[in-house]
Image (cartoon, rainbow, N blue to C red; front, side, top):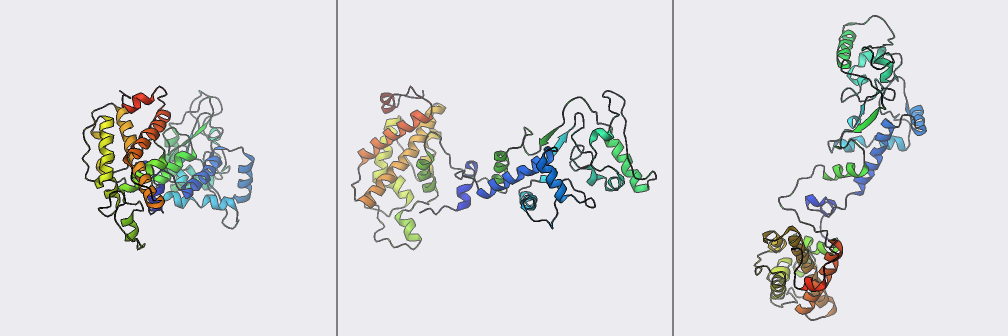
Length: 381
């Protein structure tokens, strides 16, 4: 039974979640790839088909769609609103970098400013005869290294005041353009590398509109996540202990802890104050050669490795052992509860040592770690 909120479960680990991610975010990221491809794959047959179906010569757009035409492309374009909620504007996400100017649309691509020039200079765009022209058609005379020259193709020779002002602004902007030998390329603005990736965009979506909590559970890749989840849930008091079950109106005949048979069973009691657990922790302290463990709550146990004046790897090993200890105590609790077993500290300690050794040896890539050194905790410096 899992009572952890789903939003908490799918949250990134840096936000205190399991890092599973959302299927919705994954789907949005994969659909956004088609925005990237539409911008960058100008010669693709699929793009030409989309253009032929959705292009409207009376309503130009850099990402075009006809609302009256149903189909998957209409659904792909509709994802923009979902991205805007995460402060990601797909209309401004792709910027072209000019080299020879043969693959970049002068008016329809984002290359000179954050917005395409047809949006920045709408009056001039109305006068343009060849609205799908590329940068090389308008800038330069075709021979690289020659003096700066602009080649216009207007539908009229007389400009009004607004058009003249826009033309002067455009000429001023184009003054910094210098065509050169090379292939034009595109950059994805939401990644430092400039390359689009579904995983990178998904990470942005998962982290959007989240506040980092003051305390974040620390995961340890030397221990399987299914093991560390016991400690993760216990810190939030989300394990199905007897007190937790009773709080949710689930009938429980006896709330007492079966490991000590003295106090009510909550996560804090089971892992911290229970006499059975205290014996386990003191044996762990003796084995790991650290001072006796004095803990007042679950957080004290999870922070135990941070207070040790040892090497970084040794701290990580102690942290892994702590997580495995939570798992071992919980397994013993379940065995006593559901299989009528008897509480056995020796069995729990042996299981903790054996399983922690197996996981740490293989996951830390310390192939030379021997069982004897592990039992004496003479490892990792």
